[in-house]
Length: 371
Ligand code: NDP
Ligand code: GDR
Image (cartoon, rainbow, N blue to C red; front, side, top):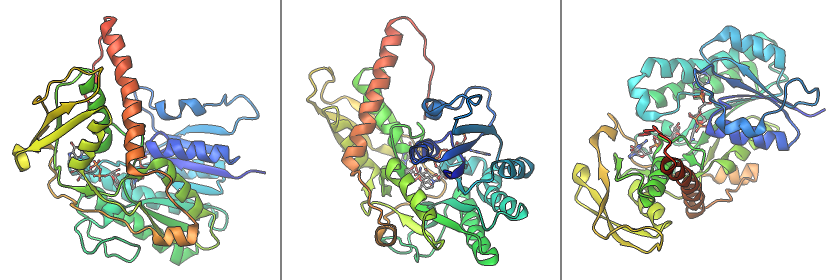
């Protein structure tokens, strides 16, 4: 008999990659999805299986991390061997606008999962992965950041995740539950949400190259992040739950890059050399040269600008992870380097932009403003 997993946040970037990964390993996968007024399953539609078919191994259930009754009923029905708690209001900037909701979902949501497992008497059977984050480190105390670096959260999101982190540790110590925190540094992919900086950039690169967009407006270009590929990171989540003892692990690449450099690398994927002038809120990016024969973009054209609306009330300036414990104890090693990640993202966004261009030229109206 294969194992059964329950994934909260299955419609998100990581949930989609993890579901695919576990199905390939022979798991039966159950996912929690929120009710929304439009379909929200784009990232997992390719995994759909007919629930009427007795051989089906992929099931979706309506639910929400703010609803204990729903979580208890679902966990009782599914009897999971492993729960991956990936559901969250995951946007750091938005958490300043919705702090209470973020605390409820990201903080208390974690408690609700742990309590449900305890109430149902599943503490011996069910292993739990908690999606913790490098945002916990916040204001730099030391670099590179490891499992022993002190936390200093800098946003309602990070403070909520700090509760999630400690309540996971507490239930492990208090009730002997197999519960682990994965302290994951930023990880991206072609299915990354469009309002996170990497995807916003790669999408703009493709749309600017095709003349569908004039400018890319960004916030703090000086911020540094340790960016990896989501595909590598979901494997680490699974590995944590296959160990004999529950432990917390940092998952990162060990390389940190400025947002400005990510912009430069992404434009260079389509042959556009960019140079930056000005400082802080006045900073702008201009085309130095365009080497791609298909794109008619003149040197000197401004294509990047800073918009102070994207600055955060409190920023996390510098994240750099030390994944040596995960490498040593889990045998985990990231397969992707940053340039490969950027290449894959730009290629995928170029395909989408070409489709958009085609539809527009065919007279179809498309209204999608992501920022
Ligand atoms: P996404 O934003 O892509 O996905 C978040 C998921 O959570 C979506 O499925 C979303 O549903 C769901 N969700 C949101 N609110 C609720 C709720 N109230 N109840 C149930 N589900 C909810 O995030 P990622 O896939 O990038 O990240 C996965 C997890 O890992 C998150 O917890 C995130 O905070 C954490 N993390 C992410 C990192 C990264 O770099 N990607 C790094 C470290 C941690 P819907 O689709 O309906 O919006
Ligand atoms: P982050 O990711 O906050 O690290 O959280 P995001 O991509 O949103 O920001 C990274 C850095 O880029 C700067 N930045 C901008 N960010 C956005 N979104 N939009 C902009 O226009 C922009 N311009 C500059 C930000 O200020 C920041 O410094 C992500 C999420 O996935 C979290 O859920 C996860 O926990 C952490 O990564 C690890």
